[in-house]
Image (cartoon, rainbow, N blue to C red; front, top):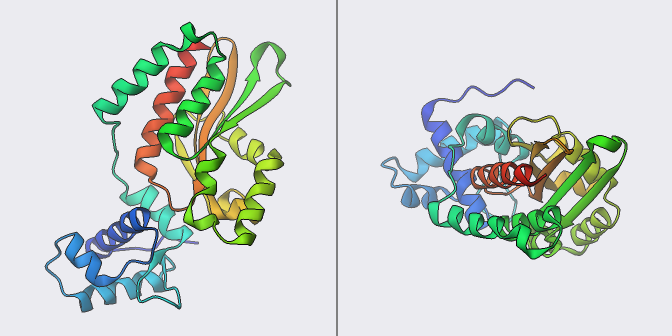
Length: 247
């Protein structure tokens, strides 16, 4: 499907709706966008722009609300065209570095520690798939933070939660999805149906490849399609690069 051609106004409004939806986890109305982002145009003009974005398949209009939510296509357009880099704040980087520097002294498995650190700092479900270079067929999947993804609003209905529990209990599809990041030189995003059907369709994966002398693998976080992608891309990249130093 060809990418929609949007002018600057529509690009800005789509960016505002996506970022507002990530923060609020609820449909976004024209008045909220106007006030929150200090726009000088009228709510009616914003509603017209939202209708155009809906016609392009980038926004959806839930029947129970006057607001809009981004579609998978809207999130993909945002990630590819509108998203701005979000460096890790210095205070967060210092906290990460303190914990990472202490890993060898703990006597614990560094890979497990990396997964737990990523799960806590991302507030998502963190995964690490490793192929040991000396035994190429051998793979091990480590994960942590299941409570983070289960707490997201998107998984609070019984059907969604049941599908999520099944996915986490039988993680072969997750392992295959994470494996696709193994040769990635930088962190990237897979959204919704790009991951697969069923419970995977409700999720996104931010992942990166890890390569060192002794192992080859991929590290990532799984969450709902509504995720703070700029922050997570920076975080996954940084923890992955630091983990490679210990491998």
